[in-house]
Amino acid sequence: MIAVRRGVRSCAGARARAALAATGLAASAFASACGGSPRPSAPSTAATLPQLPPAPPDAYGQGGAGDDVGVAAAPFRADEDPELAPPDRPSHEQALARARAGDYVASKRLLGRLVVAYPSHQVLVDQYNAVVAEMERAQAAAKRALEGGALRELPPPPAKYTLARPARVGDPALPRLSKESSKKNQIVDDEAWFTANGVHLPEYFVPPARDVLFAPGAVSSSTVVNLLAGFSYTEYQPSGRFAPESLPFTLPASYGTMPLTRAIDSAPYTVAIYGARVVAVFEGKGALRALFDLVNFVHPPASKHGDAVIGQATLTTAAGTQRGAITVPTDTISHEIMFALAKGGTLFVEHTNLMYAKDNRGQNAFVSAIDLATGDLAWRSQPLVANGRNFALVRGAVVCGYGFTAEPDFLYVLNAATGAVSQKLPVHSGPDYFAEKDGKMFVRTYDTDEVFAIQ
Image (tube, rainbow, N blue to C red; front, side):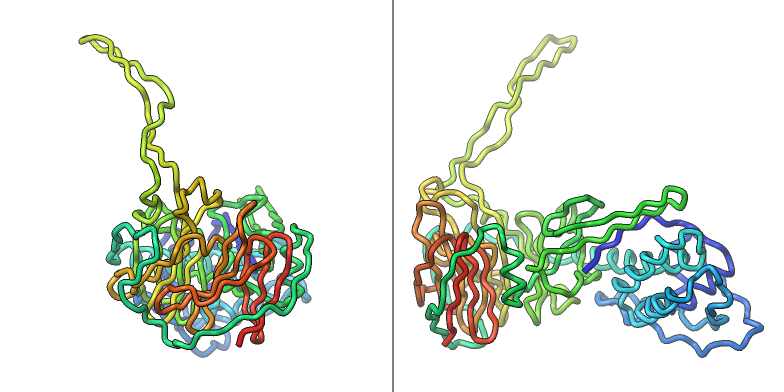
């Protein structure tokens, strides 16, 4: 899993166009990479290749990546580029194959590594720029489609268990959980827990908007900079808690000024969380299904609103001098969207904060079920059931948990159709992660690793 940032901008006329054609990308991608208009390449005097197949169409219907593909070009042969060492040629061939298949994330990674090693290799630079330009074009189209979607601002939810109507969940069967084992962990060995159990969350690693040494969720990173070529390339090694697949590049990286904070594979949906309040649900990795603004979920009724004075201001004009306080709005209780999943036409969202129940006046750690088609609230759970890093959907149930220092710690099985508590099972400490595998629910708590059989 690798995220690459780039700063390469270089073009070399006919040779670059031939290199671009070898990737199977559109001439328009080359134009955007180089800041000019594409020109058709002259027929090659060498034996020409068959027309290359176009790349897959854009998921948002804005046109395929290979609309202009089909220009015959001389083959990219090793003897034409002697600076590329023989051991690196298979990587280059693989990069071109991935680009033709529309897997630009993999192609960008492979080409990025090659450009780091061969910063003066013009064909590699141009191909890398073309792949990046195609990804940027798809990102721009995805962002336009997202921001053109209808945003529904949902009304404030209740702060107690409420059932408006049963949620659509598909499988209504409720599982029963029974504890099989519990053992102490080392508290800081989360990575070892994911690896030892062969589990991960249904969540993609979201690379930071800019190259940073320590990105959230990244175990390590490395950056290579070539100042002469204006090139910067960064690889991140994400935590084992993330899905092994790369973040789909067709998923918008922001909604307005709100960055993408979490991206979750909830097949057949993809759920994206922007900032602290907006949730977008996509059909697979393509069309927008629902877009909700949950700003009214941030502060529960128990939160006290006010203004805090952070300074004083003085304004002097010909009419005199005026003085006043500089204030900012405050709230005593603020929730964030911790996790979300979609299933059977319903979005399930966890809102919580890491504060004591008494400081929240008991209004914390909810799961809400929202109809994807209408935005109506189907149900809201009782408070204090979900403050883990995630929750799981198992058949017709939401498996979640709540715990905090000096507070009781429990695993909850909620009826996904009604939100009612089906089971309440004690755990040793506050539950953080939930992962289902082979008929078992693996639960990582603060200081114990617990396993439950699913029946």
